[in-house]
Image (cartoon, rainbow, N blue to C red):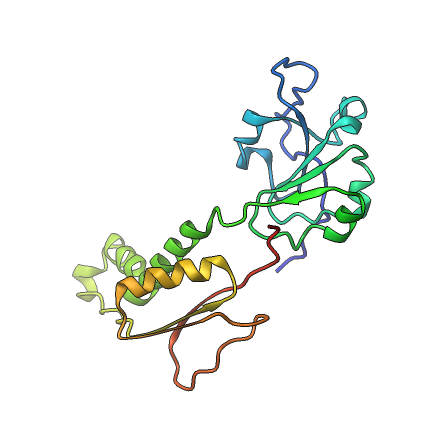
Length: 220
């Protein structure tokens, strides 16, 4: 996997322009901080609640220094050198669940509040985890491709998938607890769960299908 590119505080799309000086909508100015792989187009709701601005904007020297909020797109690292560019910032708003990518010690030293998405995505992640597990074991997507490619009349029926009889769910995140509720309802014959400590995997002798939800630091 290629290394992530250095974080920037620039929007990679050329169509995004700052509205801080042109749109008198009384929305606050917020600095957008992100890795190059992320774009403001992935987060359209941001422009509905703030006037986004970035360091590449010609008006950043006017509006940037007085911006009181930074919105971090995805897991983009936010370090001391980035905060030096934002002298008036009072709050850092993360769009992901964890805050491992944010220098919490430096934010605390500067008396900057930090928040993130918290448990907002837990229910959706748990749903997708169950769906993907069933899809892989029951070969739903593979069977769909088999039929669409016209292989059924040529090679015969697609082989059956695997039935889930043993399943473990482990991790230390809120998503783990949500996932446990999902699979408990599904009544697997052999289901086990464990709130693992410090990322360690619970030790069970026999092999089972497993789902692990690692947890980063989540700011209360």
